[in-house]
Image (cartoon, rainbow, N blue to C red; front, top):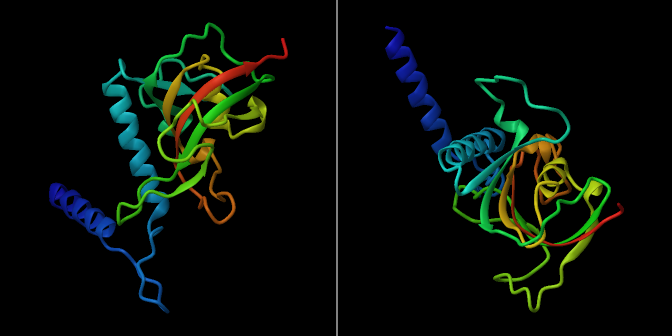
Length: 197
């Protein structure tokens, strides 16, 4: 009997992910239906991929507090997941008080129709470092996920970064382009470190 209940519950969850609600006035599907659940499922799946491929991925715990010792069931929302695209030649990591120059493109998880929503970028099209101008900012002036990752990168590193909502813009989001509970996905290259050491 218990197995049947779990099977029925699983079926109901699967069906709920396939149903897309519509705006009552326009009949257009809402691309952000079940946004919190979809983002949590997405970051859960990324965490599994990162764990299964440690030679291609880095899993970095938030710099704000140490991970629990011998934690057999870590909270995936306390980590940033980084797929290594290119290894840099730098030898030092930026500090929290340093500034950096980066190329980046930020987007949300794919919408129901597969559309990719880019909410911010420093370059257009494919990254061409001969043409693109990097953006300079303070490490301590960006979201927690970026702060965490930047302190682990060296000049030249290019990573695809997956930031859980708690290390991004939280449950409130940012403006009209980033809804609450959004996983942030970045293609980011660290170009230069401007140190205050």
